[in-house]
Length: 599
Image (cartoon, rainbow, N blue to C red; front, side):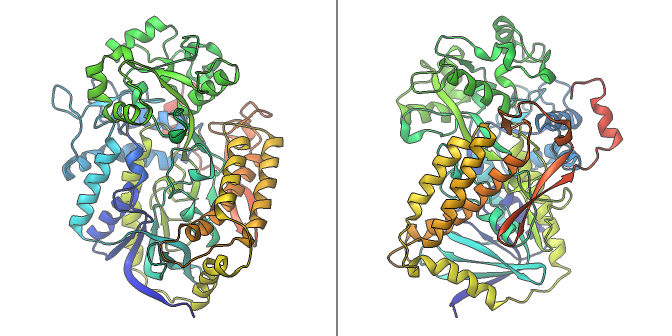
């Protein structure tokens, strides 16, 4: 029998980003005992990478913004693949959650009147991004962390969870190990909230750090939960290109929100090319550079420049410019904000100034940045109910990037931070309410023994496969054939590579002990990464159309037959079963908001 230490609580929250911390606060305020488990350290979460702002229709900038406009922008940006009820809740409650954050102690930038200042962002009709320079995510984490510590929680840092434990159909806890000592741990809980973030490490060029290997989504999948729209992976238009060691590091959309412009090697602002403007956005954006320049002086009465189109549109345009031979010296395009002046840049974009100065020896007050799309976010994930974040498995809830339903085929910038606030709170409240109706479940020793054997097998397999080698080969395959532009041929080639790597992963070999052993950690990570990648590619093959982040060169147009259904992936033995589910109908009072407007 594997030896392990056991911890108990009413609610177990997995993930210490904004969604997890907000769930902790909600569950504690409901009177539940809570344990928080994170793979890395408290305060080191991808929430801090959301630099540009948190989207909420406060209407502080003298524009007629409200939740209905935010609802329409989010649905339109997501190509109407979103769950309308999820979006409705989100748009209505985001302002309250932002003001609540301010009450917790968050310090936002201010208008001359003393209100929270809001900046423009891609896909948002009005200035809606409440911000703290370009360090909004960091301020959000700081504030929520202080509040969570204040309400009281038990924190387990540097613990990797690898399996959900079930009593019948119900989730009753989770199993994993301490990354430092290698000792196994069991967390018993009446309800579990997954706020485990995304899974961008499957790609070679990504803004995601080492933690993002799909642990949460795969634990849910292996426990029987439904995954939804896994083909929808967001390619943020602006990642660093040079030097190679930081390729893919995020450049906030706030640069474009503060007036940054995109140019090719010939100095042309290529986003004004009519070929890059989707039909449903024509007439809403500046059509000349002169008109775009006037927007800087009067954002309220002039149309936004096309650099502020949704991320999927801008990423495709950059990809096409580089493919056509009009790229920058190091294979990207130029993002230029120098015309805004050094004082303005250092005040509004301090992190970007420091990032380029320290990592690339580039002074963005004098020189343009080189940018290219980077894997940034996952719109798909664990299917979660709008009101509660409940998954298809009793006792398991999901919030934030690990949950699917809000963003559809493409996420608008800034919506991620308000997402984690709104649904972190709701999932924490729902988990707490559920925990009051059930006892602690029974832990099945057989499930623990099975997972312990899986974790220890690389020490005993006698194989010769290195987890780092498999990871590198997976990242190369996904970057080549499952990135922005996809085809049947490329996706099939990628799938065959993944299936071959899965067979090789049965012969993983790790040496040494379980203490401080990154090779051992990587052996479990690569198995999760391979299965997640398989599901992404199978869903991308199944959706034979182009919509949002899914761009099929062999199916370049939207297909109405795919516009009203989500793709669902479930575990079927060792196989992945892909089915479709009709989108929930939009209520008439919401549908009428779009009457007379391009969908």
